[in-house]
Image 1 (cartoon, one colour):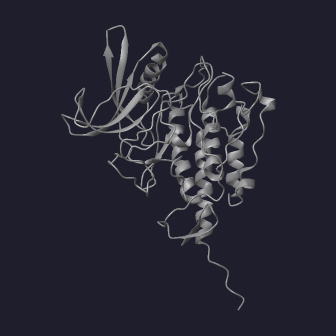
Image 2 (image 1 turned 135 degrees about the vertical axis):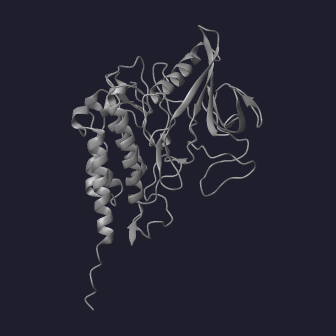
Image 3 (image 1 turned 180 degrees about the vertical axis):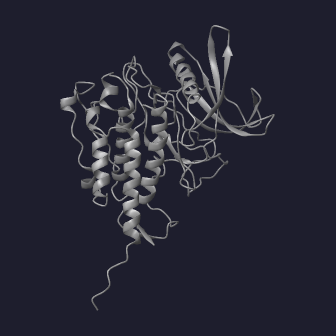
Length: 367
C-alpha cells in the first residue's frame, strides 16, 4: 500500500518516513496581542516537552538541547531552579522552556515518583498580573474538561498572602511530543489524522461550553505514534464571552477576536482552518490584523483580503479538503461549518476517501 506525501511523491507503507511540505512559505510568527493583551505564554521557537540533554541536538525531532532555552526578548527571569532542586514537593529534572513570565520544568513528584510538567508563573510587576490570571484560568477551564486529546492539569499551587497571590505553579500532564509547528506531518493521511483528533478535542470543549480561542500549530503536540494533544488553555473562555482586549495569534486570529465580538465555537473553527491552511501550504491566511506599513491596526470585515484557495498553493490537496478549509476561514462566523463536530466528521470522511484511493488497484498496462 502506498500513500501520497504532501510533496506529491509516494510513500510505501503506512509507517514510512515523512518528508517536508512541497510549498515553503514564511515561518510562523510568534504570539502577540493588541491593547495590552497577551496571546500566550509559550516560547516563540516552538513547543517541545521532550527532556533536554546537555550538549547535543536531536536531529530526528529537531529540539535543541543544552542551556540555550528560548526566552522571549526582554522577558524577565522568573526563577533559576537547577536539576535536583525541590519545588513544592517536586524535584526538578530539567528545564523545558520559558515564556514571557513563566518557566516550565520537567519535575518528579517526591511522594509518587510520577513525572509532571511544572509551570511556574511569577508576578514581577503590575503588568504581569495578566499572566497569573491566564494561568489560573487555564487551570479552572481544565477542571471542566475530560478528553484524551486535551492536556490535563492536576492542581494549582498559589504562593503569597491570603488576598494577594504573587506567584503560582501549575502541575500539568507531561505531553511527550513535538509541536505541529516544529514538525509538520509528511503526508496528507497523517495530516488529516492529526486534524481530526484536534477537531474532536475542540468539539469536546464546545460541548462543555468553552472555546480554546488560540488554536495554532504550536498548540498541537504530536507524539511518535501520531497521537495529537491540544495544549495551552490560557486564552480559553466560556462560549459567548466578549474579551476586554484583543487576544490571539496574529496569523491565526479570527475577525471576531480582533474586533472584540463574542467568542464562540465558530472562532475555533476559524483558528483551526487557518492552522490547516498553514500546515498544508506553508502560507498564512490574511487576517483582520493589519500587517506591514498599514496606517490602521485592524481591518473591518469588508476589507479583509480573501485568502487564495489552498489548492492553488498546493495542488496535491484533495478538492474536498480545500473546500472545507476555505469554509472554515470565512470572515462571517455564520458562513463557516455549523460545528466543530461537523468539521471532525468531514475530516474523517476525506481521510477515508484518500485511504480508499490508495487501496484501489492500479490500472493494468495495455501491453
